[in-house]
Amino acid sequence: MITSVGFSAGLGTTVPSQRTVAESYIRSALFNSAAFGKSRVSLTGNAKTDSYNSTIGPYGGANRGSKGDVITNGDTIGTITLTGSSTINGNADTAPGGTVSLGPASRVTGSITHANADVPGQVSVPTGLSGLTSGTSINLSGSNNQSLPGGNYRMPSINISGNAQLTLSGDVNIYLTGTSALNITGSGRLVVSGNAKVYIDGSANISGAGVVNNTQLPKNFMLYGTFTSSNIQVSGSGVFYGGIYAPDTAVSVTGNGGLYGAVVGDTITVTGSSSIHFDEAFDVAGSAGGYSFESWQEI
Image (cartoon, rainbow, N blue to C red):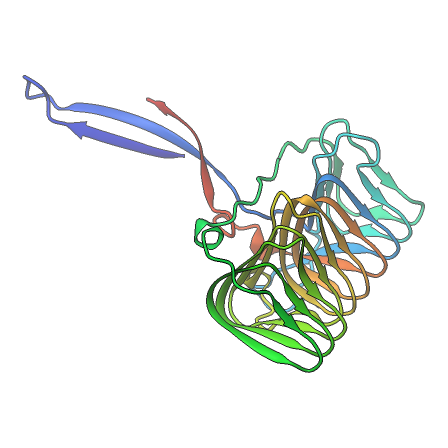
């Protein structure tokens, strides 16, 4: 709540005029859970969620918590489903009418509730990116390396395969407009050295070595899926440090690599031995989302 008091000189009188207005704002952090599925979330096999805080240091030991919450807007039976030996180390919350389906060996360590009313907002590509003239796609294969200096870029796609490497050196904002927007396969890798934000209209396939975030700070790599983004898949044995915000997109996390950060999608599927380690540094007032105006009234 912010209270503002304004004064003006009196008209025809020496008594000044005064008005007081109270304004309310709500926190709009992009992430407040390990996985937020607008429609559905499912964990299978040995998949799990938990948490840590990147401002303290790397995940592990004492820096391992139980805030790996899973939340959904789904209001149907089994809108959160756990099978195999999957575990939510945290709370599970659905919209009213939704249920949490647990297999015989799966569990939720925290509370199970059905009161979620949060609705994730759609992704809006900044005009500084959407208004750029499109460049050509980046296609790297074999043992080819390329460096992309800090700046704003718009292009159809980035494709990295073989043992190739694309290094984002500095603060980079990229808008990929192609149907198959981001593809990292084989031992190919996208190396993040600064702060990178990638917006995609199409699909993303991140496998093999995948995204190598040298900072190991999830906030320094953000992958945004717009309304037209169809599918985002993170697989392989590579470790992914970053946030995925794609509320209208099917997101899957597979393989043996862990995802350190948070995921927002339409449907979220976590399979095999995959894990989502929620970075509690995301769930801080002003981080990633900031505050948005809600209402005001004159007092």
